[in-house]
Each structure stands twice: as C-alpha cells, then as structure tokens.
Amino acid sequence: MSGATHGLVQVPPGVQCFVGDEARRRRVIEERVISVFEGWDYQEIIPPLYDYADVFAGGDLAPKTYSFVGRDGSLLALRPDFTSLLAKIAAGRLSGRPAPIRLYYSGEVLRYEPPQAGRQSELFQMGLEHLGGASRAADAEVLAVAAECLETLGASGWVLALGHVGVFNGLLEGSGIEGSRLATLRERVEGKDPAGVREVLAQGGASAQVREAVVRLTGLAGDVSVLGEADRAFAFSASARGAVAELYEVVEALRGAGLADRLVLDLGEVRGLDYYTGLVFRVYAPGLGFEVGGGGRYDALLARFGRPMPAVGFMLGLDRVALLLERQGAAVPEAPAPEVVGGGGLGAALLRARERRAAGARVRFGDGEGA
Image (cartoon, rainbow, N blue to C red; front, side):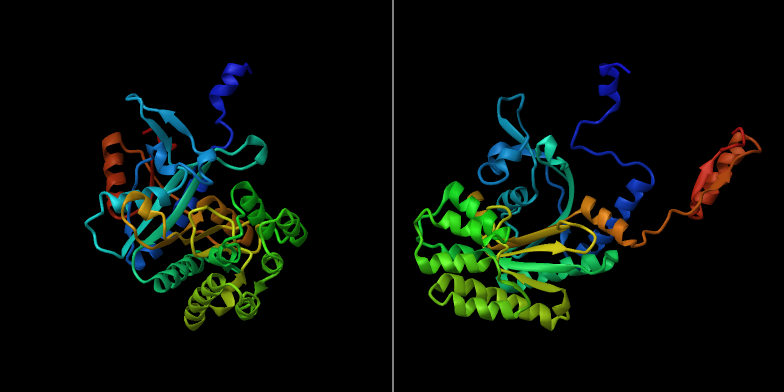
C-alpha cells in the first residue's frame, strides 16, 4: 500500500470513529445521561463548535487549543471545553435571563495531546452548568445529579472524591509562590508526594507553619473526619478554614440525602482547570485507573465576560464511561433483530415494509429476496 493510499484510509492520531454496535452503545449511554439532566430541569444548549480564540485564552487550556485564522483574519479556535463557551453565552445571549440558569450539553471538544501521551484529542463530553443561585445548594444539586447519572447507567463501586481548592489557596495566601512554581506545587500535592512538596517549598516564600500545612494536605484523604482534622490543623488560616466549612456543609447535605457511602474526601484534590475557585470533585470507579468525570465551582469565570455570577458544573467523559461499563459488564440492551421484508414485487414489498415500520418493527428491506 502506498503512503498516499494509507493516508486516505486511516484517521489521524487522536480522533475516533464508531460504527454499528459501538455507536449504538454510546448513544444509549448519552440518552440515559441526558434523561437525568432533563429530569432535574436543565435545558439543553448546543454551543458553536468554534469561537474567537480569546474565549479560551490563558490558563491550562491555551496550550491544548487548536486555533486557526478565519477568512476575515480573526483568530478562531475549536472548543477545547464547554464551560468557557457557556459562560460567554450566559453573559451575552442569555444576559436577560434571571439566575439561576441550568444548562446541559453533549458533544465533542478537541484538545491537542502529544502523540506519545496515548490520549485522545477528540473527546465527547456530557455535562451541565448551574449558573447563579445559592452556592452550597447548587454544589449539592450538581453532585446529586452526577450520582444519579452513575446510578442510571448501572455503574458499580463508584465514589465522588471531593476537595476544595480554597484550602490549598488559603494556606498559600501571601506566600508569594506563583506561576510555574505554584503549578509544580499543585502537581506534587495532587500526586501525594510530601517529599516533592517539601522540595518545592524549600525554595522560600512560605513560613515553616505553612510548609508543614501544605505537606499535610498530601495525606488528608478519607471519610468526613478528615474535615475535622483539617479544621484543627489549619486554625492559623481563616481562608483555609472557611473552605473546609463550605465543604463540610455540602458533605452533610449529601449524607442527609443518602449518599454517605459514595463520598470520599481528598483535600489534596487541588489540580484541574485553573478557573476553579471552590468545590472540586472527580468520579472514580473500580475497573479504571483514571477518573470518568469531574467538575467544580468557578465563581470568577463569568465576570470575565461581563456578568459576575457564581457557577458550578460537571461533566462525564462518554469514552471513559463506555469503557467503565464494558469492564464492569453493565448491560446495554442489544438492538432487536430486524424483520426481513421482500419478495412479491418491489412495490408490494415496500408497502409491507412501511406497514411494519408504522407498527414499530425494525425492518431490513429486500435482503435475499431480489427486491
């Protein structure tokens, strides 16, 4: 096969193609998740596939964004996530709609990933955004919706790992640690690497009390008792204690709603997209070595587009959910076998096929009958 022909029949690295049963399983998953979103009175939004590049400028997504120059000379970008787009739309087209605004989406995003990373550039996300409204109630609602999605899909053993970026940020308030050094520190805390955290903090800028507190974050994971331990350990930081108190309020609401056995606290959960300002969470389940989704609170993002408003959201990755369900053996109904309709003349056969379709049957027209 020549190189030119090979290029014509292969898709580029990082993109995907699904056919037949593969596509059907994904559609069933999508429809089940959307039914949950609709059941909580979220409205569907279908945002543009691309927008001006400055919508996604800055932060963690910028290096992964596919950008291009439009015919009019403007710099455009394929959407690398939905949240920034929905924030812009809420501040623009939906500016007259009162808060809270509840929106859900389902579709592809595109992010550049180096080929050697073995990761996809084309990702299908199903998620929602709760814009405005009382913050703790919205946090609890979004987590309850995420839980119901997993229950409806038949996933087993899953947990919601909850954290709050305000704990980490509060501890480092006034330390002068920023930029790449702050990003490295986040990675070390997230990686449960106390020695690595000490190494970064040894470069100066933080007191001994702060250094020990940040190191302690790497091990603050477990049940709700973690929050009491954190409250005592971080007594010197009003901001960190305030974040712990916010998280405790949400956890108590979820425990009261019957989700106690699905919660794990992880105060080292500090990474993720840089627009998060409060609650953050990830969804984990046995059978995968990575999360299937996650989300968090981003109270400062909408102000960037001229409409200051608190907000929280989450998404599930369809590819990861499908892989999880496959590995766990969760059943997705098979398509019914088709009725073969043919013979007796083309017009008569086509009439019978239309009649069977009107009755709701799945038909395959003409196979083996010469029609």
